[in-house]
Length: 395
Ligand code: SAH
Image (cartoon, rainbow, N blue to C red; front, side, top):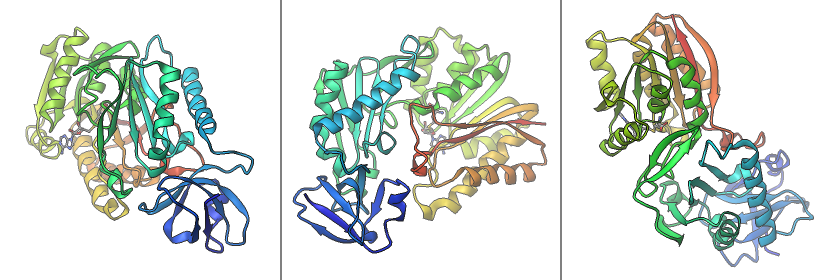
């Protein structure tokens, strides 16, 4: 079979079951005829290391599918991986309360580059690597058999795809076109999701548990939800009895969906204010008017897209966190997040500690947060942990 031989001594990360091989680690490739096809991975001294999907364009030349020599990488193998992923979600998702969740989480489900999210009767997929594209039709067939979905929509239009040498693709793959807005239920709360132009596949499913956690702090509170998108955190807080919420987002489309979500859940819209502004600027405006809040949520977009952006991103995180800490009433609560994979948890904690020092406030960490468990993580693949958050009490 086609194979990839590594340079001597470059098998260490594979021995730790890390699933990526960078182009610089490769000594020779043999008999590869198609982008994305399966190769045997062999160490510099000729030992079997695993099977993976080869990409001729990506810096990540091989993404590992299996470390077991006895595995045969065929449709049956892929079907098993999909079924394992689906079965695991059945165990952790209460489908009476939640009908929107991540079904397949790429590398962390041993299906590198494959993302599948379920929104009610529809599936939304991303095929983000050469290997994912190679198995695309088989994966679709398997998903149709398991879910019998009303439709499957593709959102392989993230920028990451360009680095893989693939073209951005978007559109219907199977069944009927999803409606303009799909209505989903999350912990019994309703949300409208636009799977065509919404961020990621339409909704931040990874924040589900953190939105739920916010509820226990929200009763009677005045809340500032920065980077509010379609109001996910706000709707949860309202349902739990929040008094007043201000959403801030730069996107008018997101804010208008947020209004729809308020109506959908029969919330008194006079308690909700939507501000279309840049959060960096708006927090400064609030500072200058001496406004204070009981709870502030900071859930910004990814500030660091690459290693070279870590320093600038850190300054951005510190800036908004410092401003937010100063805007909280005594015993106020900060929910602060970073979804940049390049900002590791230790660094994020340090940024918040630095912001604390400069703010002159006393900050107690009440909880560390991460992505919801349908966004699986592997101990051998730290890159899979991207969402970090802290709940802080500010004295
Ligand atoms: N907390 C949300 C997800 C936030 S996603 C949820 O649970 O659903 C990040 C949001 O930040 C996006 O809606 C994007 O439009 C917005 N955004 C990005 N940069 C911004 C800026 N500088 N000021 C205000 N909003 C911004």
